[in-house]
Length: 500
Image (tube, rainbow, N blue to C red; front, side, top):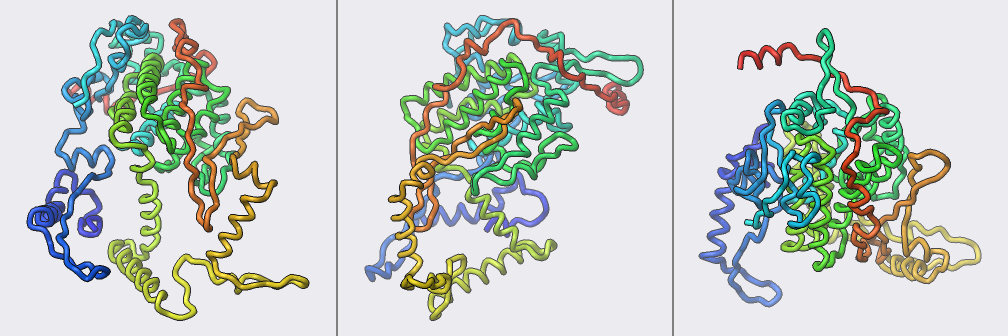
């Protein structure tokens, strides 16, 4: 209801407390003073108390609701004042690196200097003093924007290269200026060439997934500009779970490719239906090593606060339980239904209210009308069944038909392979007539409803390359087989820098 009360094209930001004040007063009254209510089934009164247990929101809204600053040097609410942050001189932004602090004291990455910030790491991890869905979305957008070099979304620009030179790392990637106003950037190990971008985008454009798995991935791919557009949170979820690890097959150096696959498998593990609490520490160790490998290959500007929060996700699962119980994909799907109610874009709130009340009234009245069907419920079976010669058709209700359908599926030998495991195929980017087989979560068809079958997903580190195989101190940071990135000099920004 707050979305209807709040007017204007922009969100209220920190002024959200003005709209929450009446809600807080009602909650205090319902908890302290209580309310006498009548129970119609027992025909007696009882004392009603109300309690706000938790709220689900993204990270910026978390700052507005709690009053905590989600920007600046101490943006991580878990690390607090011990957040390891650094302001980039040329990029003029704050990056959150230093994930080696979360490694064991005897880990070899702590002693490596050249691959990181030219210093050994001796600081211990801070003691702990976040929404997986939006963290996964932001990490996916930053990763794809950097790989495809999408303007406005890439974390690899001229200023980012100058920051690396100022930090004394990867000096071979420094910008090279030519005569005139053109500057080019040497291709880094994470930069895709034009042919690799075509292979990456064509793989995603050719994906055909089962119904309900994701949206139409082909509509998100622009082959002309070789980029992905209009990515929603569930699209990023599908990419990070399985599709991205398949699309990068055959592109990028082996070390960078396997590092990205490790991150994809991490998100795949924490989103499983069942998680063994005894293995959460192993998940924590694996993701810390993964981000240490990211620090060796990707620029410091890549590590914003949303990327840093990924390290704390296993801790959140330990306290709050499985991720799928707290994400908002179902709510976002329902928001799409509400947006479909809008007919007058000048008054969207009124359109949503009128259509919702009309639908609710029709559905309520249909329960008291003879020979009427409720909204989104199939018609009676006898209206859809056509008689055949030699068979006796017995009209039945929808519930009985679903039970009969379920019985047939459970006792048919031909259906057994499809009931145990559902798969779909993606063309192998390496070429040839081969395809990559991807498995989806098994389904149970019970009473006409399609529900996820709760089965344990194996820990991602079982089938993942070891960090010893990925770690290579002599990895080439320059991608020799890739085209250079040309940067056009902005004269207006140069004048502004001189003035400042």
